[in-house]
Length: 237
Length: 154
Image 1 (cartoon, each protein chain N blue to C red):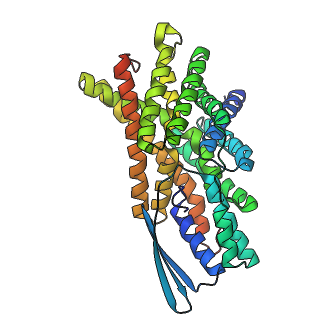
Image 2: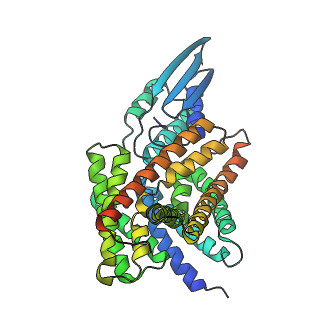
Image 3: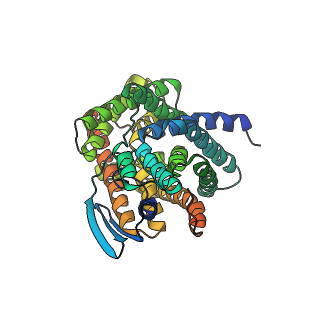
């Protein structure tokens, strides 16, 4: 479950082991690969092994947080299995509403642009492009498309709208507008997670996540290149 | 001469992306102010350090600082550390360099190789990779130190 939502490998192992101890197992051994978890628990000289398949979901930190709090709570209060199961079933994603997310992301990318020295008309265009891009991303995710396709289409939309900045010299810094409006697609979390995993000795997890992040970046580039060829602007010079 | 006002304003601007990206990752609502503060703090610290050292070293020190702060915060509020740390380093991610590297690669494939384009490609690529590595190393140092002990952080 933690793996689904992008937690760090070390955290997954620690939490499972501690939860097992708190529930009365003598030991928990765990093995992780990017798409599955193998877990062996030793209870009263019997060992039980289960394998769980992991499905990759969008990163959701609030779920990770809730699982961790359940673990800490169980350790402190010596609760039983039924209590934990009940709690785990009640873990829910608390998503931010789309109407709040869209302008905030727009503002975030525009702020990036501002830090890189964009002028005020460019700021406006970046805001618009990133906000609409985020809208497209949320919409496509709801339709259950693969994350890769979502990224490519979002990048395509962002670049199309951001290229308005170069139209009739509306903004003097069109290049920066183009680059900062696609920043909402940078897969920073998988990259950092990959390196953190690799440093802590989970090499295969690290590689898996690195590959995932690289694929996302490639798809983003694909979207940008498509859009640029479509308009035929030479935005990068 | 250090332009304090400029650094402060830029740090405030950097807080915005930190919050925005934290919301993409769906962090719990109560941590949003910390993410904003962390983002502003790391970016401001790096801007300040740029006066004294290179961008890679500055990024490394800033990431280490937020890594250590994240350990304290996570203990106090029982949160996994990545919530604070990753949102805070988002403003430092070298997205712009990576983007320019890719653009020069596309130009090379469209117009043929020139020395200038190749130089731009290598320069931007090295910047992007080394900054990314500096961030990751900075974040991992505090947690490596704490995982030496038997007692887990939370």
